[in-house]
Image (cartoon, rainbow, N blue to C red; front, side, top):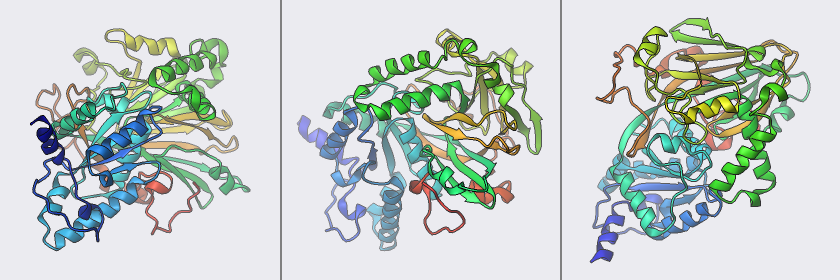
Length: 478
C-alpha cells in the first residue's frame, strides 16, 4: 500500500514525454499532475552530491524532465518546452494548458547556479512565468536560505528527494526584486576585444564592445559587492578551480574559505592593506531615493567592502542589514528590508572581525542607506583592477587608470517568482504581517521607465546562455 501511495504522489510531479518533445509517441495520462516540475541540476556542485541527485531525480521522475546543467542549457530547454506547450494548446491539448499554468522549476546548485536560472526566466518575459525552488548544493546558499530551503547540502536518498518534492508542492509563491547592473568604461585603442574575452565573468553578466566603450551588463537577485569580501571569494574560487580534489564537501569548503580569508589579510586588513584601498578612496557612490534625484552617499573612511543587498542572507546565512529598531528607521528615513519593495540596502564592512558582529544578536554591518538606484564612479587612476562579486560569483575586473568615466549603475528591473518554504526569512511588503505598508505609488515596476536605456537594461543574461541569438546589436565575447 505504501508503494502505491508513493507512486501516486510522484505522478503529481510527472510530465509525459510528448509534452517535452514534439513527435514523441503519445502517452495515456490517467493522473493529472498537481505540481508538474522541471528539474535543473548542477552535477558538479556539492562534491559528489550533484551527480547523486541527478541520478535520484531521474529515477523518481521521468528522466526527460530532469536536466544536467553541464549538458543542457536552461534557456534552450525552456524555450523548447514553451514552444511545445504553445503548439499543443493550439491543438486543444488540455494537459498542456494545465502544465503551463501549474509548472514549477527546481534548480539544484549554489547561488550562482540559482541566479543563472532566475536570469533565464527573467529574459523570457513569459506572461505566466514559473516559480522556482532551490536545492542548496553550494558553499553559501544564501538565496536558498532566504526562502526557507536551508543552507546545508541535502540528502540524496529517495526519501529526502520525495520530501523535498512534497515541500515544492506546498510552497507559496513570492516575488523577488530583480536588479540590473550596467558597467561602462572607455576601451583602449588596441586590444579591446581581447581584454574582454580574457575575463571569466559570472553567469549573470556578459560583456560587449559598443562604439568606444567596454560595456558589461546583467542582473542579480541577492547582492553585488566590491572590495575585500569579493577578493577573498575570488581567491577561494581560484584555488578550488586549481585543486578541485580539495573541495569535496560543504564543511571542507567553509574551512578552506576561512583559511584563505586569513591569508588574504581580511581579519587584519588595516595592517595588510593600505588605506588607499578603502572604498571611499576608490569610488564616489551616489544613490537615488526619489525619481530623478541623485545624492552623494557618505562612505566612512574605514570601509573596505561595500554590499548592495536585496535578500536577508550573505556569506552563508548572515544578515548584514539586520533588523533596525522603529526609532532608527524613523530617524534615518529608512524602511524595513523587503525583497519586493523596489529598494536595495547598502551595507559596509571594515574587515572580517566587523563581519563576525553579524553572529551576535542584533548584529549588523554599517548601514549606509537604501535606494532605488546606486551609482559607483571610480576615481581616475586610483586602481587598475577591482574585485567584485555577484550572487556568489566573484571576478577580478580590470579598470583603465587613464579613464575618469568608469562607472557602475544598479537599477531596479522588475520581479521574478520564487517559491518560499517554511521557515522563510525573506519578507514581502505585501505580507499581511508586515509592519510597514507601501502605497501603490511606492510599488512601481520600472521596466518601462528610462526608455533611453532600454537597450542596456532589457537582458539579464550572461554569456551565451542568457542571450537571444537573433539580435545583432552587440558583439559577444564569451
